[in-house]
Length: 255
Image (cartoon, rainbow, N blue to C red):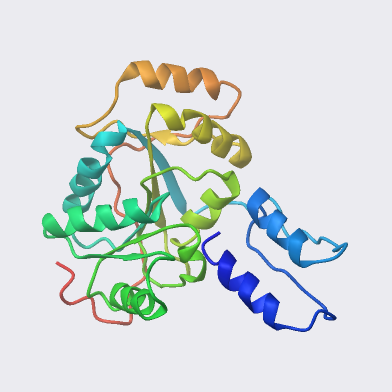
């Protein structure tokens, strides 16, 4: 949890006799431990504990070796230069590395994570919302407050450790009646995470092998064994263009 020290510092400054309400979009073990340390005999209320992905989001998975993910990301972004893309990274250091590599490839990108100052996070978010950058790379914690219209694609560079977080991630696209694309990169070590995501969503993500870095049928066969009881989804192939409403703001400078 990126802001755990800030939360503890705030709680140390308030009176010991108080009423404490603790809210979190998800409740993994680390967050639950924090809540229990701050609250005495708390009552727990779950609201929609199993989120459902929006039907207008087309989901797909691309099987790729970890060392080839950066090349695949660059390949995808150069294929559609009008896309407004939110990329999720598991770690802060990887998020920065992704941005550095994208900038070397002449792709305008910024990062948002808990190691950035509040001002830096706000600037990165404003640049993304206003079209000065077309790619924003974020960690799960830093992305909780992102509410930007016009995001056409969400790319999971790393699969989420928590299946519920996957739904929160991809829910950043397909807003206000628009459609969106959610692409998940998956290497061998992430197959069990993929199976958990598919089990939670009660569907298998469509496999997209129409890219130069596909790992081949061996990994696909192993994945099929893990997800044998999950209903498969139909693959459309390629990287489809999402339908979206005409943005009110200018998209000048996005190309």
